Length: 551
Image (cartoon, rainbow, N blue to C red):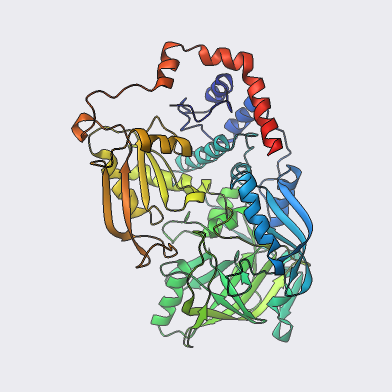
C-alpha cells in the first residue's frame, strides 16, 4: 500500500531513488541511507545544494545551519513573565504542527521583571529536516516522512557496515585556551545561576529550570554517563537534580550511597552540539556500558573536543555554551522539587524528596546561548538515531519485524509493521515489544504493506483490519514510564496489543480478505499513476506549496 506518498514523490522520482538506494522498496519502508543515497534523493527531488556544515561542533554552528535553510524564527523581545514564549510554542504547534514548526530564537527575554540578554532558543530539533541535517544528510524539500525514512536507513546502514555496532571515535582533550566554554569562569561568591536567562516554562511550574542540561556523572563500578534531567533553580548556588529511578545518574547516586559515600560530583553541560544533545536525551547507548562521547564522535565522524572541568576531573565538551559544576550531597536530607510540565503534556508530580546540588563553578562562553525545552509541547531531539538503533535490535529479536515507530506527538503509541508468516504472530511479537519498550503502552501491529510513519494508515488499519475480539491482548502490569499521568502505580502500567494485521481464517478472520481498491488500480491499470504524474504532477505539487504558504 503506497498511498502515504500521495503526490509528494511521484513514480519517476521514486524509481530514481530506487536505482541508487540499496534495498529500497516501493512500499516506502526502506529507502536506504548513506552518502550516495542522499545525493540521489537531492537529484530526484530538486533538493537545494548547501555547502556542508557537518559535523556541527556547537549549538551555534547548528543554529547557523538551520537559519541559512530558513528554519529559524527570530524575535527581538519576549515577555516570559507574561508567558509569551510558552504561548508562542503552543501557537506554533497549533498552526504548523510538531514536525513543520521552525526553531525559535528570542534575542531578549523578560524574566522576573528584568530584560535579560539571550538568545533563548527552543524547538531547535523540531522540523522534519533536522533528522537528516543532524546526520550530515540533505533533507528532501517538503517531504518530511521521506526525509525521516532516509535518516532511519542511514542508521541501519551504519550498524550493518560496522558489525551490528555503532561506530565510535574517542573524544580528544584540548587545553582550556582552546575551549570556548572557558571564556568566562565563575567560582565562590561570583557564582549566580539566576543571572542567566533560564525561564519558568509553565505557570504551573515551581520555578525556573535548567531543563536541557547533560548531567555528567561517574562511578567507580558503573563507569561514565550523561543524561538529560530537569534541574530546578533553587538559588544562586543551588539546583535540584532529578534523575528518575532507573536512569543512569540515579543508579550512580544510589550505588555511591550504598557504598557509604557522602557526595557525588557532577558537571552539567548546556548548549551541546546536536549529536551529544541527542544521545543525552535518548537510550542510543542501550547497555549503559558504551562510551557515550565516543558514540557521539562516531555519529559525527569526528571526535568531540573535551576539556577538564574546573572543580572535578570530568571531561566535558569544550564547545558547549555553559558547564555548571557541583556536588550532590548523599548524606544530607533530600529536598522537595517540582512540579514541572512534563513530556505527556501534563503537569508532573511534585516530589517530596529529590537530589540537589551545590554549585561549585560555572564556566561559559561570553553571552551564552540558552536552549529551553517546552517538554510535552515541542519535539526535544531528533529521533531517527534512536529509532534506527532500536529497530536493528528489534529485528534481531524477531526477524519478521519490518519497521517500528513511536510518534512524539502521541506518547504511548508504538506502531509496528511485520511480515506475518503464521497465525498469532502479530500478538506474540506485539507482547514482546510492550514488555521491552517502556514507552509503548498501546502497541498497534500492522501488515508490511502499511507505513508506520503515516498516522492515517495506522488509523485505517485499526478501522478496517482489526477486530477487537479476538485480535487484542491486555497486559495487566508491565514496566511503563514514570511520567505517565494515567498510571496509579508508576512506573508500572497496563498495556494493550492491537493486532491490526489482516486476520487469517485460523485467527478468526474471513475466509477471503477483499483486495484494496488502490491495489487493484495499481495492478489492473499500472500506467494510470505515471500518466497523472506526467500530466498533472507539477500542478499538484504547486498547489501543495501554495497551500502551505497560505497556512
